[in-house]
Image 1: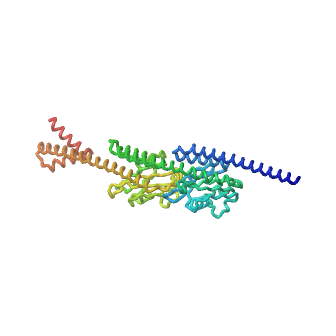
Image 2 (image 1 turned 30 degrees about the horizontal axis):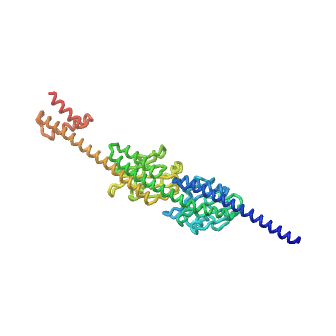
Image 3 (image 1 turned 90 degrees about the vertical axis):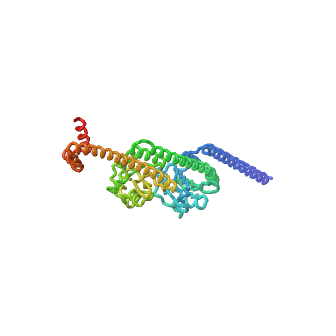
Length: 423
């Protein structure tokens, strides 16, 4: 009887423990559902990509109590993962930290579409990649989950702890669910950002066309073009350099940069540095980091101004380069074909403005020369009549007087005509 009571008590105790465990599990699931609901509400209607990524990072850190969190997005055009958002570590690396598929734990997760959870000594994992000797490389625990949208990996979320940390099954499941849930919001924000970018490109081309067709002076036109182009390309510095055909040099004639050092940068010979090569070779040239590019002439100035990537596009009139447009970024940026094409379109429109200005100037010069010639011819006629001399002698008199007095032949001719009219 006593044994029966003991067994019964054990069964009741076990039952109570199971009920308590179920209650705890229910509470956890309720919390998870509430968290997922909050995530859905906070990011599903937000179309600003930076805001969406920041909210995702904040939520993940809140859930995991992590010391560091990094979110990489996959760039399908360049086939690489790019750091787009961080919590705590090195915000300056946003846009600069890049990994190929399969590179490091992050690249492995993206390629294999599987999460990785390491409780301690993460840097000992053979897949681990030491990146710029960051303090995070010495973090113990490492959790990396793929971000999924429409059954495709579009990014990776990394969670790191300074001390060893056991990732529970519920934590792994929750992070995996978050990785799937936020994928759609990120894709929507990226599509919206792309649409805004295309709309800005079209608007910029339209505004450039209107500016060129206006009655503004060339310097003002070029200044407006660099301002609009800098906004469209998200440039740290945008500049236009024109070709002096006689000296075979490129000179900065317009830039939105406030840096006096950059504005006063020495002229470049054709073929020198990146811009000189773009003009000589008559093709766009993109450089990922000018401070490490052999042949780039102003690496020290670039470091001082915080310049990194450069796209240099020649300004073409038919098969002739008349200058170059430069677009610099403050971080590493692999320029897409679309960006190169749109900047080439702007460059060619700017070239049209320059050519039109030259044609107008030449036309005005020709018109002025014709008017001057008419005045000189009239003065010759006056001298021929009054002095009874031949045409050649009349011309030499005007020419000699011009040289002696250091006045133009037009001024001498006008004086001859005026003197004749006074008589």
